Every structure is written in C-alpha cells, then in structure tokens.
Length: 270
Image 1: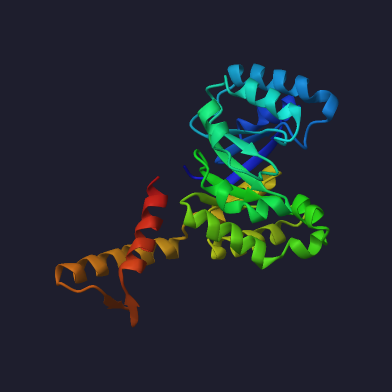
Image 2: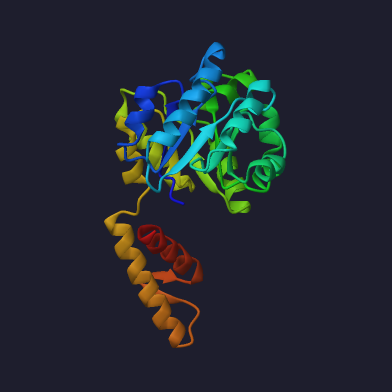
C-alpha cells in the first residue's frame, strides 16, 4: 500500500466527499472526529454510509477516523463502518493501548495516531498491535497533553524520530503529521522533504493543494531511480564474482545499499 498522501475529508460534508473521488490522494480519511460537531455525529455516519454505496474511489485506500475510544461515539462509529466493505482501515485518534481487539472485531487495518503523553510512552504496545499497518501523530493534541508550546513541538525532532524508529521496528509505515498553514505551500514542501529524510513514507494532508506536493516528494526522484538501478547492477555483478561489497563512484556499496535500492525500485513499480 502506497501512502504518499492521506487526505482528511470531513464526513459531514457531502460536497467534499464527492470531490474526493476526483482527487489524486493515495488514501482518503473520512473524518468523524474533529471535523464533525457533537450534535452532527449521527448525521455524518448516515451520510458517509449513503455515499460509500453511491461513489467509486477505485483502488484507493479508504479510511475512517473514528472518535476517541474513550468516548461512546467511537463505538457507534465502529458498529457503522465495520459493515462497510469499501472501508479498508480505521484511524484511531489518541491511541494509548494495544488495539488488537479492534482489528479482531472489524477485520480492518489500523492507523493509530500518537496524540497524548501516555500514547508516547505506550507507542511500542500500540505499534505492535495486530492489524496496525501504519502510524502517525497529531502534534497539536500531543503538545496540549504535555502542556507544552505547539510551535515548539511542531519542530521537535525527538517526537518525529521516535515515531519513525517505532514504525520501522515493527514493520509498519511511518506517516508524517498534517501541516496547518494552507497558504504556505513552500513550508509544506520543506516539511515533506525533512520527513522523507527521517524515513517517513508519506504525509497526512488537509487540503487538495497539498496532495501533488506530497506525492512528488514521497515518490522516488529520477536521480534516486538511476542510483538504485546502478547500485543493483553493481552489487549483483559483485555477488556473482563472490564479493560481498563493491565500489561505485568511489563509494562502498554493500547489501544495505542493495536493499535500499531494491525498495526504491519496488516502490516505483507498485
């Protein structure tokens, strides 16, 4: 599953749900949590079910962000979307514990969001839950939970790196947080580039203008593709000659570089 861009769409907006069919996001996340007022939750669930039967998103991943598991609304969300075959996965806000029960109950993949102090301390339990296929985080809620400054935590390298390390440890995708300044597309691009360098595979987005940038940044560049092909060719030639490593452009190429190169090619072909 490629998740270069995951677009949040308010489940209460028929216009935006219909529009999402035309957009180029790899994943669509229908939001039943923050984007829906408490008095509109039931209306949003009904609308989403209606439009899921009517519209076609092709092979794209369709997700639903449910309400916090601490709230009764989340169980109404689960009961509703558990019956919908088009929904591939559930996004869980403020995840704090093992989520295996949710996968066993619904059969749908899980994307937990780390958004609380407890969630950070329990991140390994969360990531290794059965059914988890990706992990992301919400920096606004996390900074609120910690009593810290949102603008500081937005750039906090510890948080960003901890998410990636845990995701890689348990073999799930690391997806970077949303970027709220919709007018600053250059800032969004820079944050995507920084996230990619840390090891993130994609970005959660909140506006159509961010989709193409995320798709571009988290796709292998022409230069990366050329490098990968040359590394694979050089390493496989060296292997035939009985060598465990070789030299390419005066740099050492070993099995680690070979695996990285293979991943780039596999991503491009997926």
